[in-house]
Length: 336
Image (tube, rainbow, N blue to C red; front, top):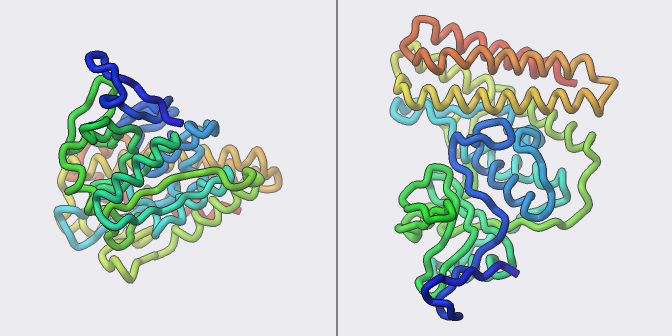
């Protein structure tokens, strides 16, 4: 059961905070096991798994999900073209499924009928000591508690949006209904007040098979992938090409988004390198190829550090992206 933390001034059953214990707040860009917290869905999954007694390093979980190898780019919109949608991952929930399956976990998607039913569902899960992952339009948030009788909800949001922070580092949403009403699964259709809960349903998979599945996802995501539902969205080689085209045409030059996009790619490719290094240890027949791929991903990440500081108008910006795209193709081509 969840812990009940009583108010200091009113120590009675009518005024209390009910909370999931042992979950520390982490926010966008902060260190999480050696990498910035930039892939929010996977970062929150790491916190959820740890709450259930499975402590997986965030970079390795990012690798097992396949998201470490991804690149997403929205073309044709100069204002938003740089955004990698760090909180949305791959098509639908494949990336979450891969990461969960590796450790015998599965998630349930709750689609309640209306805001009040959604709140009741969250309270029931918190009472059962289950953190609840919700989508708020601007990305996921992890609900970790609520206050009785006011109904205030304690959550962790990567960017602390639309909220204030309490003494525990939790975000107290001030406009929860408005933003939760914009919920959706990654790249999915709107589904107001959607939430996810996670439970272990099987034994952990054989690690070698989980790693192989992540490597297969890397190859699948590397092609010229587009989406019928999101025609301006590009993935893999198509994403690199669209980004380079926009930069050459003078679009997508907002410095903050440019730097954030590059920083996110650095984070993901470092996780890809870490997964390849681990794969080389457990797949000895492919060790040489995997070690070489890890080195290429490390080189790609290193090559993107200084451009993020120089900005999108630097004379070398386009050539830097071309080299990064070539390194990405070379790394995938070398995967077993």
